[in-house]
Length: 437
Image (tube, rainbow, N blue to C red):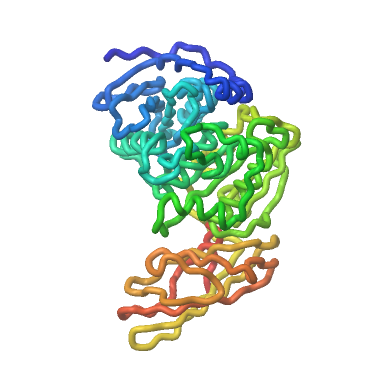
């Protein structure tokens, strides 16, 4: 099918409050036409918004729009940008700057688009809140799979971001597919599972009004329950919320922080707090850098329609995509780890000492290391170790998660081995590489 260059002017982001109220009135909008359309077997033109059809399993009849920059890199990253209620993929394209950032950094942008009358994503049904359960998350996963096959995309650099209903879907995608998404950025959302309903309704007033509260463990269990048995790494999460949000009220912000810090296994006490812009309070959990396990930005006096130009670039910084090419590897930072082993025939004990060599307290830590081949942890102390072999993450206990500057903590584990009883040779603390000695 012939294609044409994009010729529609970029429109300002519509008011999200009006959009969500329209949901309650069952307003019906049609998505504007994309600039080009292609079958899944066709070559997608670059530098224009293109609809891709027949992209894979799609139980809720989503539409897929794609932006591929002229400068697309080999093995590109993928950003899934999810629209708000009554919006569309083309609206998200026109109302945000992810395409121009893709021009700069060479990643591919996927814009899912709802076709049901509300134009809201399903974040409420039992099908949506379960891996491969059906509904919208399955269709979005198919879009990612199609891009991965077509462009040989880097499966370790797939990210989700969204606004309002799209922010809620970002939470759902990271819960359903922790093995697909490396990180997410949610602008004005609610926790995974908060909007759950069983009567077919898309709207949950208790959640929207901020009256649904749970313990961190309960929130975390909802996420873990979406993919039972999964023990791999969990996606990092960036959260944005306005204090005067009167559609998805501000208490949801705190509940999301509780949920994702628990999922990440880090303390709820911020490791760092700053104000990157007037009226903003940014807290980071489990780390102090741009790629902390959880980052939360509170906007004082701002309502539901908080997204503005420049925020997408901050999301890319959190993703690690603002330098082009693969995300940078951790560099030696403010930590030191000493590890020794004491071995016998087929077993060993390991003693690990972690020292905070920085000038800022660490509140909640995760120590990453890879066991030598043939070693399997049978038990441990001072931390929770998962999984038992290969790339292991040791998460601090409740009593030793805080490390003042210059302070140390000693932990350890017992393991079986098949001949190699050496200690791990490299460690990361909250994603930052440590010196060893």
